[in-house]
Image 1 (spheres, one colour):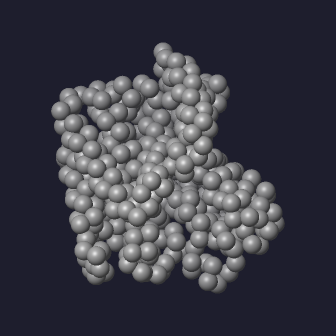
Image 2 (cartoon, rainbow, N blue to C red):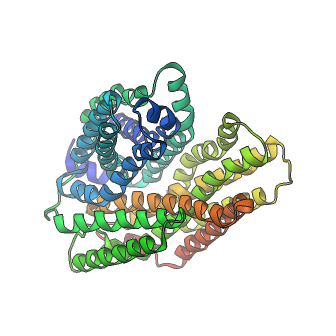
Length: 463
């Protein structure tokens, strides 16, 4: 297929569908592996003769590797082509999964998880940019809606998939199952993914190191504050974050394609969409982390019942996301996002106001309402971020999209830990209340986009 046609009009059918299948398979593995190991941590610690505290590195190593490498890998995608970076990330993720399954020590498993995280970052940082080249401009919202649906379903199925695998096999199978899926995804991807034009600028190693330090230290500071770490240590991390961040921003000044996309953050629609995303994912994670304590400790539900009760949220999101994608091709992201986040905030407020002993139905429809609201917001917001960026800066936009999600999720989890430590008796109610406030703030920021000039989203050159 002619490259110019691929840039302007996306891929033809059925190649478009095969390309989306390749993207969906890889994204599913990357999202699932963000949480799937949590379920098996006690077993992993016991089998590898590690302490519970040390075994947490199996989870942390994966998340940290993703955090520090998202923007650098997105920059590599712009320079060398999103297809190439995606395929390399998929191969690395699949090989690292095999090493995880064969690991016989905590050190080996942790190092393999770091490699797996780098592979996942390559997948996550360029999948949105690839979608922009897979779908024609007029149908971009549909492609982003499919991505949002895949992420939502993967998030919802994570604990269930882990439990199902562990019911018939031991913990190495949690990672081994990625190998055949990765091979299939690679076979489909190499035949269907579009070739994207490479950029002329060179990779900025200094900025990549500063970016890794800035975001790694920021996540460590947020996590430390949430878990009541020693104040001097938290302050030290904050100071180091500010120093590295300042050096990073100064280094980006004047660059045509900065690794930290300060050029894109000058576009009002893009900056407002990033802020909306951070606030919304903070709200979502506040609820996701706090509600299981409410279900089990206050209502006496089992772990299995808790998982089932939480499912309506991501399930409703998965149902709504594709429709929201179609709507986003016709209506403003500011309006759809604002409406969706207000619905989500309403659902959270209704959860806080539940009676002492609510029935399952009362819980289910409130959680579904939250999922409907989040689904109505997410796809239009992601589309707005991508459309606001010039086509040749899709990698930077996709990297920031994933980074905003990760920052929001980390902040939400840390806020729950902080609230529970300060007010353990009212931790869940306060956490969900803060989540509602964050959702309403996010709705307000989203609605501000209605006041931006239409040219802000499209005035940048497309190629």
